[in-house]
Figure 1 (cartoon, rainbow, N blue to C red):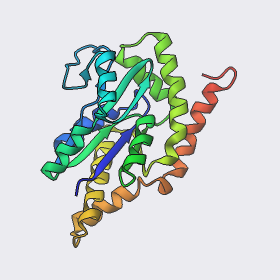
Figure 2 (tube, helix red, strand yellow; figure 1 turned 30 degrees about the vertical axis):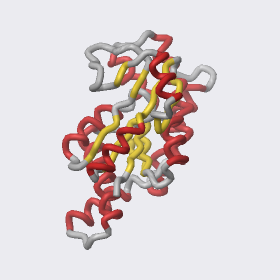
Figure 3 (tube, rainbow, N blue to C red; figure 1 turned 180 degrees about the vertical axis):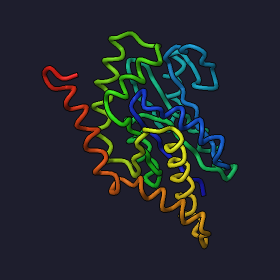
Length: 230
């Protein structure tokens, strides 16, 4: 049985880096490369980071019902092709989807059993530093992304797991544990000591177990939005 994992995060939270790392260390894991109408950035390559298509091509794919989900973000379309799920199921592999909160809601309506993971930055200041470090966007775009992030994180309670991406190595281990723990639950086999440790590590990231850590992060975005805040 194929398990579908949904991963969402505000832009600049380090989601892409985490996804890239776990793709190489978790076996039998397919990755869905999204389609988008935005132009490539920097060294991005068609078919590696995204499939870059025209707006007309994207609309034609919508009409042919080729997407599991699609949404418009910052003036560009993004979508997940249905074929990736079909290919994963044919191979008996799991599928990892890197999509925004709009797409996640669509997927959960279609596949309610999908496992959802939301990645948070440790605070707003760290997110802003990461966005500026990328040096890809104008100031206006950075501010828009920060504003959008403050709205996106309000959806955290809709996700099964919350991963606070403070230290990359620890976050990678935690994401790996979540993916493997859900696989173990599906298999229902007797657990070794390593399996038990994986389950324990994953449980630490369950929504109910991280509420106390989330509140200061939310507060940092609220404070920045207040008059005179930064």
